[in-house]
Length: 569
Ligand code: ARG
Image 1 (cartoon, rainbow, N blue to C red):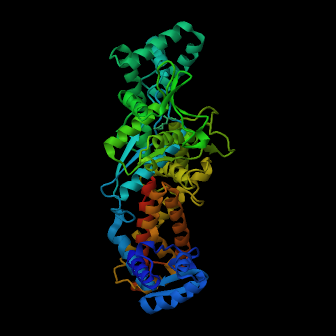
Image 2: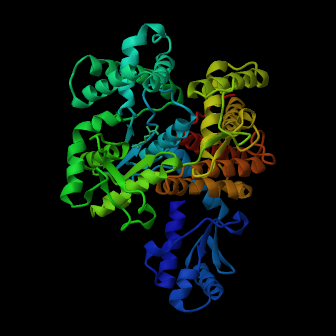
Image 3: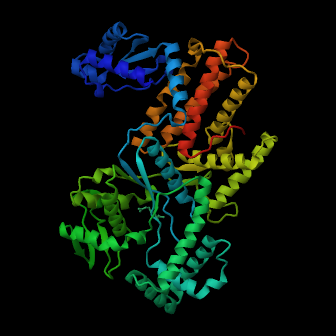
């Protein structure tokens, strides 16, 4: 596709006097209008004539210059239609030649993207709130990797804070009363909840917990630290299973505690810059001058009793990441409920006058809700643990797979792929800032805007390919002109690399999800009337090539999002 857009861009630059880099091409809103569109507003400004007039004039000029591409004006838009055979040959050729790497590029070579994602808390199960961060962050990681960036995914585990004094004491007292071997996460949760109650009800417990936290903070390497470390590792082992099922890996697991040694430096940086001040005994950075909305909410660096906070640790972590990675962008994939926190963090960077502040981004997202728009609960009605959610959905997909295709070679594996694919796709298909509704039946439907629908489309294309090859057809030289009826599909295949790039730029995987759904729809329209098998050999060959290319793009897209692309289901 790039071949065509490059030719169009060069011709437009010549005719309008705009530099090539400023010639912005778009996908036409209606694919019936053409393959590439040039909105004439900007050029019209420069030429001081109304956009529709400019569009019409440019159409004449373009038709005189370009070969194999026709230009036509539609109001203020100049639409280009590429010769059908050329479009098919070039697009299908590129998709098939690049295979699994089609959609990617080397745009990001030499640049690093740091992605803070998932980041659950120790001694608590990973709950559904962490699911979106995990899914979004991992998808972004794969998207940036495909674009040639070096990606550093960091799991900023919540492993630090005075509550861990209580946990240590609870382990000291009641360790033998829970089964920490079978299910460490659940066992730790029980102890954690019990410790919270004891902190309030039992002054002796509270005093012991405070002492334990003090010892932990002092850095002393004794029984307290060993117990805390044990709890951290047990939690991480519990999370590992969930990550494995979702196919997720962090480059670094660095809990908040990791940054403890760097806190004094972070605080000192603020003091040296003269932005830290004492307010009611606490050390704060006032932010009102940077952001009026933060007048009442300064960033708290240190409390009266000397303890640091979540924000202090995030500030230290950010400096540390900047020093270590010189990142192009640092993304925080964290729910919108922490908006204030990240706004404060960025305001502190601004007060410090750090030029890289704009490269720090809060990639915020909405809630995951049940279909009644209430907080998602388990079937039993209590707080939903992520692993249980995965189990429930996979159980359901196993039933569906058995029912739809009893002869499947590996039903368990396919059911897991569909179940996970359903959850992941559901999370990524809308703009991330919107809330996600979670309905066990809807997300598993093979017909709606779902992951399984796309997986099914992929498997169906694979089956067409198998049948054609089994029949010994498809080997002739393709007649590309016979794919004229598939122009919308070809356009979508050709634009896929632009979609991936745009998804990265906006940190918005939903752009890929939606492009895949649109491709699925156009593909469906095409193949209900275009049989592949048993046609003239040159027609079968061309259609088979399109089937393969479409399968390849759907597979690449699904994998970027974190969904498997089964060959059969
Ligand atoms: N542990 C936090 C939570 O569960 C999320 C941490 C996000 N990352 C960060 N650098 N603040 O809410």
